[in-house]
Structure formats: C-alpha cells, structure tokens
Image 1 (tube, rainbow, N blue to C red):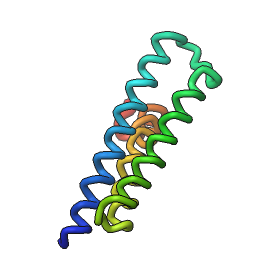
Image 2 (cartoon, rainbow, N blue to C red):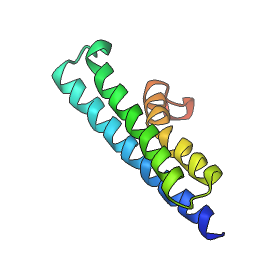
Image 3 (cartoon, one colour):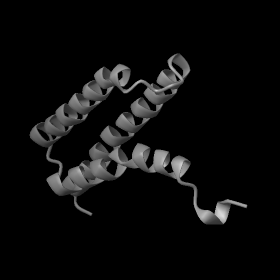
Length: 98
C-alpha cells in the first residue's frame, strides 16, 4: 500500500471513529435526559456532528496527501458503524432469539 492510500485509510478511520464515539455518547446522554427520545432535542447535536465530519474530511483532503478514495471509503465504513450498531439492537437476528 502506498503512502497516500495509507494516510487516507488512517485519517478516514480516525474521523469516522471520532464521529462514531461522539454519536454513541450523545445517544446515551439523550436517553438519560429524555427517555422518550425527542428528535427535536437531538437536532443540534446531529447538525454539529455532520459539520464536524464534512469539515474534517475537507481539511484532510485539502491539506494532506491522502488518497481521496481511501479517505472517503474508510470514512464511510466507520461513519456507518453507529447505524449498523443501532439496527442490530432494533432487529436482532433470528439465530439469537429463542
């Protein structure tokens, strides 16, 4: 793997993992504060996280020699982890149900 691809992979993964951790932390915090899950209360946090991801992606793309495909690909994979995590909780597989 060449250097730009490696940098893209590492930076995309780092940005995505920070986003993932931030989102999971915010979901736990919101669940404690309002167990009903008011979507309006979550909107500012969602918007701030999306701005963070877009800005961090742009800064990494603009000011490093990271390969744009590896950067974006690893960011998409790690960015989608909270969604997959929540979907697995909502819809458990049949093999785990008794």
